Image 1: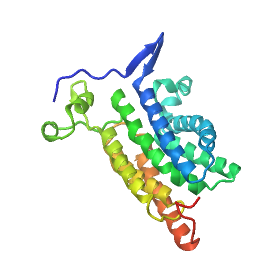
Image 2: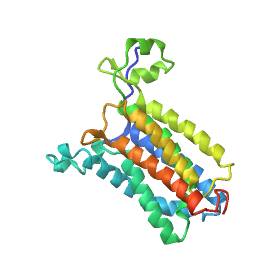
Image 3: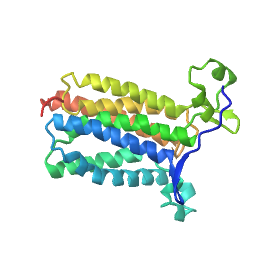
Image 4: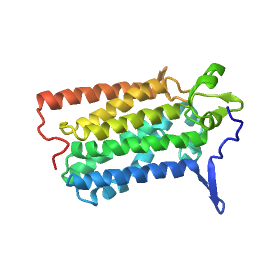
Length: 268
């Protein structure tokens, strides 16, 4: 492994204000996801302003719900440090919380606009994966969301580039780059979704695939991480992943075989 210096999580400063790589990477993921989803929405007959109007609500609500989720599952700490609950700039958000906030906001917004929630959810699936693929690299910059320590054998045989393992070496100990595992898992999922766009899936099924694919990967990768949030003795993310998979499969069966949904992804 190369003997390199760890990457500074601060990209630059604007006067006294530090600009973190984490924020830059998250913003980049949002912008790229927006471009992809916007083009697909217009192609599928959605008004060009719909996504912008949705994100005005969805982004702040998702950030708030991501923080609430994190605080709830870290309550043993925050109950004695109430003043730190609002200090989101010190870290502490959870992607499952963000997704819950985004889903609820999208559902309410689509109902208010008279647009099919399932149609929007299907189109947004690729964008969600793009945001997650890129966003995980913010964890890389912060040397967080990693797994347990790796063995010398792992370091000698891994195909993971030295510059990644160097950043995942903290105080002389190298850790599994679980952020990378999740990013790559989501990349494969994105490729599959782009291929599925050519298949006559029923409306909602693209979204169900996203939920199932992401949750399967997250369940196993979460088991490797050392920074998991817990609900009692269980890892919160693993519980949420199992519930999500069950709900997605049940809704898939109900909509396809009981409700016999006729609209497909390609329908405008």
